Length: 400
Image 1 (cartoon, one colour):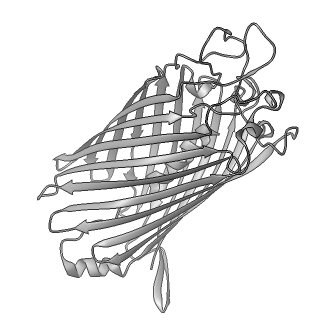
Image 2 (cartoon, helix red, strand yellow; image 1 turned 90 degrees about the horizontal axis):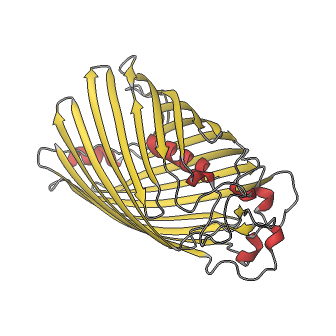
Image 3 (cartoon, helix red, strand yellow; image 1 turned 180 degrees about the vertical axis):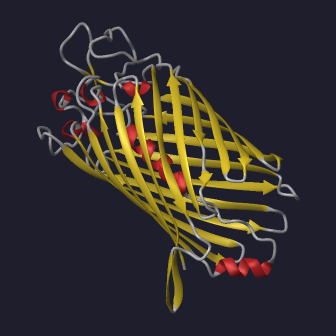
């Protein structure tokens, strides 16, 4: 489930494109008359046999249907407001071990809602902007609330840009009942197995972007993430060598995470853009990871592009991971979640993007309502633990 949500929202995020800043008030007024509505739909399916719900063995089969609507409305020449709502409906063969009302079904389902509000203020005279973010997540056994702020500044010639962001997130398990109802059914009635049902996260990120040559652009970014509270999952089992009965997954209540990212974009020639990314990640649990991403958008015409892409990821296990019945009872912390194991993964696929100057089609009744762009992509994911997945996503962008 964690892998599926991360993949989907990363793909959805890659579709959202920022509006270009204009240099005069008259142009800003023109933007003010153009609001945007983006619709995104995706289908995701995965198969595997290392479910953490059942202690590192068992089916990871999951299907997810997600839709997102993003509305961007300029409220003033120097201010715009964005509302994003995402609904994700998934069915999982292991969710019968999660939902406290169904502990014996062959499969179960869940509905996830995410809402984000963003307000951006632009200062064109100083080439800067700042804004505020407010977000929330809700499903039957989990909820979250986040707030944040950001500031960015461009150089006078707009060749360089610096951006800083900060956010705070509060997550809570079991919104409508005691967290003990999420425990595996054989562990219910054994008292208090976790000390809290909340998780707190603080995030600070810095990014620097620069145009190196007329054909090359780079970006350096780093994040500092500190989390504390319940950082394990209250329905993940762990089995030990010395006993048959499972225990509840247990991880330290503090975690420091540090991702560092380098991006380099290069126009090889007029119709080919090379987008590359390298990401290094390290945290206080002992996990280290390297990620390389390559995307090659190629313009067939001025309005139609094709882009193959690939992503390779490798990581070491956290120091508290071990497989089914490989943990020892003397260990203080333990997990059999293969998302935290030593692994490598590869993802590849492709997509197309279509956005003609005169729009794909347009309704002219009162105020113009036009389909401005259409994008679709497919990706296949495989990792060394045996898990494999596919996702297809489409995006329709309207202006009015």
